Every structure is written in structure tokens, then in C-alpha cells.
Amino acid sequence: MRATATSAPGRKRRLPVLRVSIIARTGQRYALYVRRKLRAAIRLLRPAGLRELCIVFVNDQQISRLHRQFMAIPGPTDVLTFPMEFDAAGRGVSGQIVICVPQARRNAAEHGTSVRDELLLYALHGLLHLCGWDDRTDRQYRRMHRMEDAILCRIGVGPVFYGSVRRPDHRASRSSRALHARKGRHP
Image (cartoon, rainbow, N blue to C red; front, side):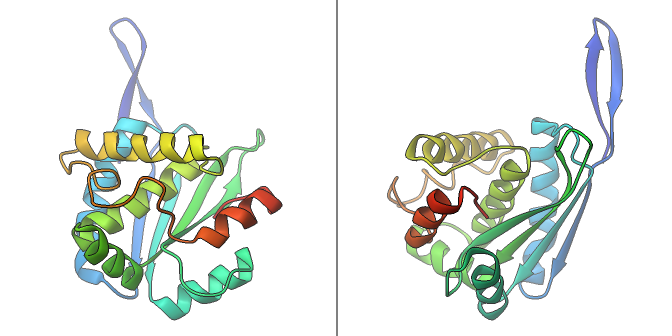
């Protein structure tokens, strides 16, 4: 995907290509939609420095293994984000977003959203983390989810997080919030 940015009045410069790939071990039918809509979100965000993004759709068992391994929390979660490579300034240049399709199905049913929009929400959430956004405090959490919904509205999807019947203080893994505060990191 190529984007342009204005560097001076009347002049445009090309932003580097951000490659987006999706590996769908489950939920293959949602991959094209998520990729297409996420590309539209990327055009809005224009993430500086990020060059490669890999999204992996997995099942409960696979996400549970990663959740335990990297966060020391048993059981499934909705999404885990992993910066993979960094530039000299410490900014992420590539990342992987691992999304649990069965968790998206459960959350979509609980919150009255579609599975594909729930998956898109998780992909966008991971992308924002790779762009430097955080949600460790209540204020950051609200700000990040408002930004997700604003982007989703601008790309024609509509609000998914606050637009659903989800409680504003809902967190997929309450125990992960305490862990993030202790360890100073977030998936």
C-alpha cells in the first residue's frame, strides 16, 4: 500500500510502503474484509516507521498458550500485539497482531456486533499499540477506544467498541490490567 503526505504546499512525498499480511489458521472468511478495512485505517493513521504488519487469526488453544507464555495469564484473550523489529530510535518497524477468532465470536454475540467487525476492532487495537498508543490507565483506555471507534466511523464501519452494548469499563481480561500495571507492559 502506498500513501502520500504533503511535505510543503503543493508538494507531495510518498510514505514508505506498509505491507499487511493475514495468516488465517481459523476464520479465513474474515481475512479479506479485515485486511481491506485495516488498509483504509492505515491510510488515515499514516503510521510513521511501521513497514510490516502480520495479523494471525488463531484458536483458543493457540492464544491461551501465548497469553500464558508472554503475559503469565492462563486462558484465552482477544488480541496480543508483538513489536518484532525496531529502528535506531527504538520505534517499531514491524509487528505481529495475534487475534483469537473464537473469542471474537463470543464477544460479538455478547456485545451485539458482527464477528468481522469485532476482528477488525482487535486488528486496529493492535495497530494502535504498535503506533505507540497505550491503554494501561482508565484514561488511556477510554482515549484509545474512542480513537478506535472514530477511525472505524471514518472508514465506513461505524462504532464497534462504544457503539455496542459493551460496558465502557469492559476489559476482555480483568486480570491482565493488574499484570500490566505490575510489569509495565501490555500485549
